[in-house]
Image (cartoon, rainbow, N blue to C red; front, side, top):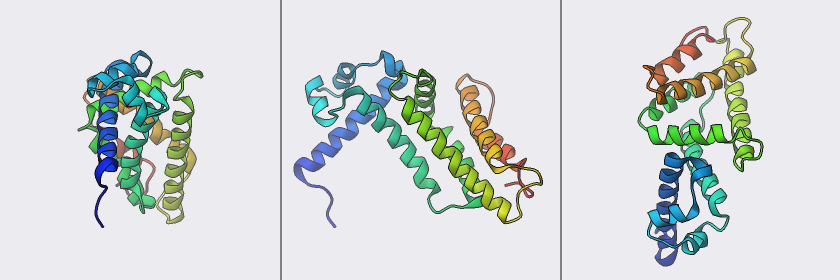
Length: 196
């Protein structure tokens, strides 16, 4: 099947350029201090031209940037269950080590979104809930296969894993000597009969 043609392809390419610019601007300045005009200038457009592609303005750009990041991670976990899913989390952490800007943007926006009035608050709340639920299911599958240590509660293990991942990213961004993938692998191993 042929790919998108003509104006549709150009529009998709332009949206991708805008998202790349939004990512860069948000990573540098944070959401609150960034402007649609700044993003438009970064791609050689007017603010009106940019809003043709993202009618929801800065909030629509933020959501698209965050969704793009999450979609990549979620795609890598598709069809994985139990131990394989947990191993996939380790690989996501390994990939993050090569994407400092992405991790930095996420961390800045996640911190900003702790403000109940921040427009990304619902997004981050839902994202954390979705991740915690998926990791809980993986731990339950490991438990059901006899691979979870006695006394380990899948939900508590999932929340601990999420907190450890977020904390390691923050330490790494602050130049602590951490190996996010190996540290997550060791953390997960503490819950398992046979470590990953």
